[in-house]
Image 1 (cartoon, rainbow, N blue to C red):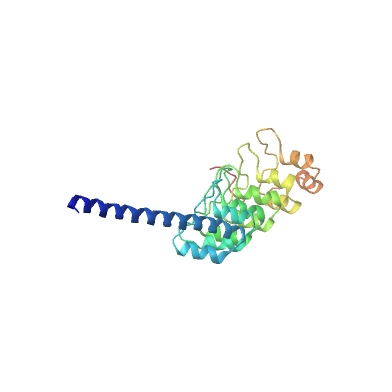
Image 2 (image 1 turned 135 degrees about the vertical axis):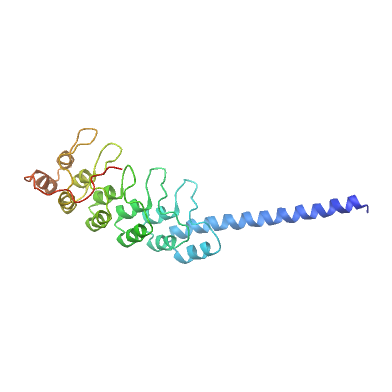
Length: 230
């Protein structure tokens, strides 16, 4: 065998070995990818911890560009969400295609303990556009709303069309949510871009509790929270 032939044979074996390693790595990564999202669906914190410890990126997104932490919070997979919040480097401010953050899902579903953990990790209470307070008000989660307001949530934060948390509470929330926002200085007469006030929202939804609160004599309460200017 000539020297050239020997060198070519060595190079062939090197390439074969590298190809084998690449294939094994690809299959392993694909398996981890599937295991990760299956673990979220099954609320399997142990598997998530194990994958992260092996180096799997907790910020991996699925084919629909959904972030694992938001998925867990949206589906109330609370053990999985807690495990992801413990993962080094987790992005607590990831925004999905609908401009929704993990804290917004926690607020919508009333996951108070996880919301506290998110805020402790610097989750954005006042992202532009729809905010966690809008989402909490929509479901009338009063304790969640208090948490957000205590962390300087803009009480009159405006959505892209100018809708405020008070408007959402008036139509979809409950009387306690409306009262809390009014007590914190929310502007009852403010209108969104289509020209609707919180009272209009309440009347459209036939919400007598909200209507009563919104038509009560105006108090002298001054806003105790930032109005909503970024």
